Image (spheres, rainbow, N blue to C red):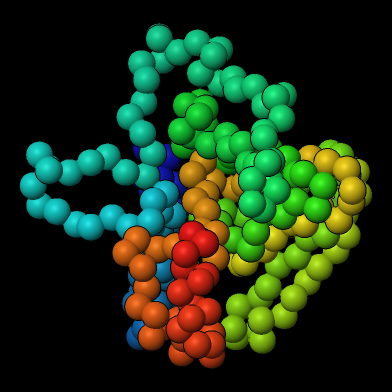
Length: 249
């Protein structure tokens, strides 16, 4: 494999350098430094570890199991026989606008590995976002992807909030046709159509399955519902308001 070849070449270089180093020291002082070989060995081991890594998860969780018969395939999908692959496996049309006539006034047409099988293992996906006038793509996060947004039509007010350690700072910008904006992985972000006409944007995401957590839906519309004592304490409001908000989802 490529990794095995790289490690072999790395060890070969270290061995040649080590032999040269020892020979030089024997000629000059007849004594090899006490810790020279140990240092070289540790450096080689550390370099080999640099090639090892855990793949990024492509699902919310993966519980370990010892019985393969009860397991499912994760972090990708089974590969189609290359001889059976066609151009349609790499094609998906997003030319038809989504219908944004809902409570928030937006519609997201996702193109992930679920809709476009050819994306499997490629680490990217796409979404088309259609906005009604004054429509909102509510605050949400993508736990597994950075988002790159480009405005195709209309004017959007966009922003994201940093983590607690950074003080939950808000970064916002008004985008017009042709403008782009980046939302870092995992951070809460939103897009609001501030115009009186429809708006369209396309989002590129750095995962074949980026995931999405819409904050309001997750907090007030979870299944089963979050205990109201938790929400009243967290939001510092009374139970009547929490009950009302839960009923909306």
